[in-house]
Image (cartoon, rainbow, N blue to C red; front, top):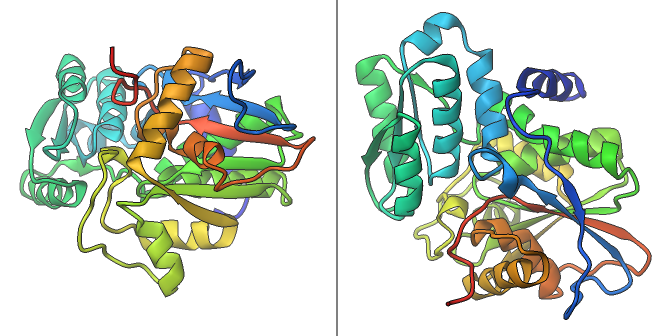
Length: 315
């Protein structure tokens, strides 16, 4: 993925099937997380399935052969990628099986069933569900779609950067949440190709510092445990492709706690009326806590990557 052709092809492939999401000027009424700077929010929480994941999943499903789709699709997911695969499967008329860890919110399980997918709960974390999904794919001859380590998925996620820099080419800093790394691998690669001087900052939970630990070690690592409620940001390890792209294109990695993500989600709700899950608010949390600082007069963009209610204030 060394030029823009993969990303432009993905944008054409998914056009009309997923939303070109709005870029919102965030005007703070009570507390400004970026004083003196212009803050833009890319609203991927408004995608049909509630997150950016539908981009990569749709690009991948539409790239498959008729024979691959006819065999049926399978994946493992914390919920959002599964919804994207189920969305693509329904659109193309093929069956889908989604393996999920027990931490998946019941609302996402119900949405998957409503899309016609078979759901299987397996293990406590994504890695457990993925191991079972791979075994099922092998046994039943299903077409497996990796949630973050597939070039087609990465290209689909990178279409966000094309939209961002077309709508606001003046963006100086882009802040992106990291789970497995498909979103930031695609967005950072495409953004740096379009604007080499842009600063890309990745944000992980303190309880799942997968990429932070890998960068410190200089190679992929596998965490001993996961301790975060942000289940869609909680793989114990990533993949070589993602590690390489992130190492090349991401300038800085920071960590935020679950409490900081919840506070950011509450800010998004109270200041803008946006409902974001914890992972959807992770990038904003890095800005709110001062772990990412931006210069006065600059333009910073935050990807609100997923919708949900787990970050909303208690009634």
